[in-house]
Image (cartoon, rainbow, N blue to C red; front, side, top):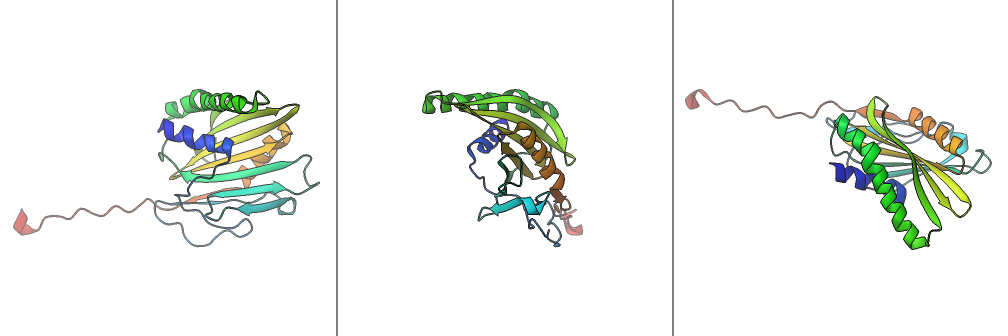
Length: 212
């Protein structure tokens, strides 16, 4: 479980879309009305203010990107949603704590070291904070990462939400730390997560009278 979570979480830093294995649906302006299938989950993403944001999505729906329009935000800002299958519906609290405070920061430092080799020290990735949380009533991890390239600094505010069968990663990136934090909170507040009923389990066939 730990290796799978770490590998998937690192995709947020490399911006590699993962396969969408949980049900998602809806558009940014009109969520679907069809019921969610048993055992599945629907994540509906919306911009807090549609007049300020340009929305895009990958062809398979596994990645949704919102970019703030020119002059609509105090600084350039991008929010990315990535969806993948959760390794478990109910993360163990101690395992999630260790992932947030040890495993994820360690993986980010490993990525930092690799990038420094490739860029001759021109780029640096630093984990500012990483902790567990509860978002949309689901267990989650909230991470803040600082990117430095020369004199340019950018912040990535990352939330990884374990929403039943799905793992939802929300990444807010801006050179303004305050804007990145504020925007992440706004998009999570506007996001809607709907779970379907528990998956149906076929009833066991009882033996006939002749078999008793």
